Image (cartoon, rainbow, N blue to C red; front, side, top):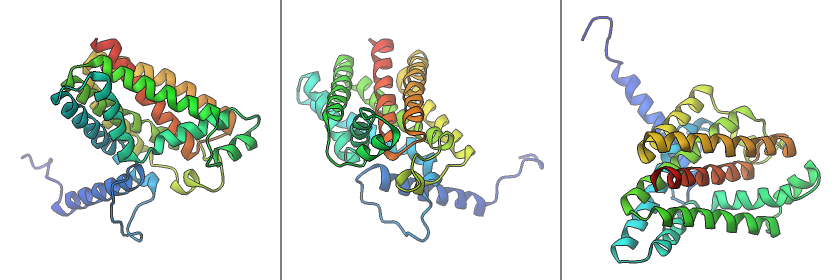
Length: 265
């Protein structure tokens, strides 16, 4: 090892790993139903854990992929296997993003920013929310079923879950919270370097899961669909909310699955 390229001090390396492990636990506690014990005094705010968002997505996608593989092993048809895989991811996340999508759809059906924000806080679901959920589930299940090959499905599910969650940190960084209270306000604004790390991780998993061509198609579709959704959120709400982030995750996940259908079938 040259004298001008020393190894990093062991204490620095262990500290960085400890910080990443803490971020992963915070992200797991928020983005999934996995019971993660956290020391509230030592825990970082949600915005400080965004580097771990795509890593959590990787685990969620892996769970869905395993369920699909098992369903295929017992000779269940692709559509049923796809339904079970999507159901597994929803169960693992507690339908967090689906709930956000439904609330966001209901809110956008209202007239005016204040009415939209008020409706989005209502626990009841309306017609727009139901339709958004039906379309989201139908598109995901249909795309997965078309891919058929279990190994391909597993890789695509991992890529879609990781890349879609990597889309959240840039929104949290670029847009202000729409409210002066609530989840988005308390989460804070992530650091620019952490946002870049999250996006890079998501893109890497996307390329590995879909291949170079499929990854490029995925990035293009995420860019188009995500930009349109973000523009709508900013114009109607003036900033992001937890529900808006959930909707953006769902749109991005569907975009990756459709990219896989385009590039791999």
